[in-house]
Image: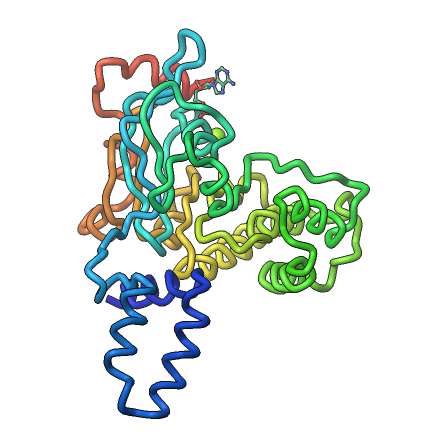
Length: 306
Ligand SMILES: Nc1ncnc2c1ncn2[C@@H]1O[C@H](COP(=O)(O)OP(=O)(O)O)[C@@H](O)[C@H]1O
Ligand SMILES: [Mg+2]
């Protein structure tokens, strides 16, 4: 229930309508008599999910997605959804198809077949609408060592086509969110891996997207850095929809609302974390899911070994 409320306000906060609608709401509330019809109009305009009847709570919809690299079927007929305002843990052994799926969702890689929609927009035919809504932290973000933190984030913002007027405010906001204010003039090449990863998150967040796609964001970090990045990701959820790939299971238990497990290109589990772990450890769920015989288990095992 708490999640639902967070979801509703998170959605409203990301739309411009909230500001004007919110202002109007306060003004008419003050006059009293117009408050109720005005409230109804505001609710309809802002697609307030619980009351408007819109109820389209999936921010990302992946349907029958397949990707081949030549002979290799890396993703096979994958379907799942990421609910608005939730953190989705995308799990699977190495080589299962996580990065491939995430690159397709972000529009960086074309699919062989199937569809992906982000807030209803098709990633293939409406890619600019989708990119505007998505922040992406790839496996190894291209950080230029001779740029300063602020300089790099300004550079990324320009690449994303952000208006000059919006830039200074956006920059201060992400520096603050990601705990980078104190190192804003430091060269990227002089930062620790944990701080570099914060910069990776900051570049994904600079245009304030409602969706974040994070590909193994804690890989290669030390335990303290992992905890810091993990809690940062947790604070980013609620308002945003996050897809987080990892094979660190405690990370999922601590951070995620929903779990999708991919094995050898196929989605083998899709459920809320709370349902999956009722009376069972997530580790057991994971091991069982990836060792289920799909007819090509040997291939999956071979891929995991490499
Ligand atoms: N550009 C590529 N060309 C050919 N094969 C690839 C390419 N990228 C990934 N693969 C293969 O596709 C499969 C899925 O890879 P990937 O999506 O990176 O998995 P994960 O992120 O789960 O480790 C693996 O077998 C990998 O070797
Ligand atoms: Mg990967």
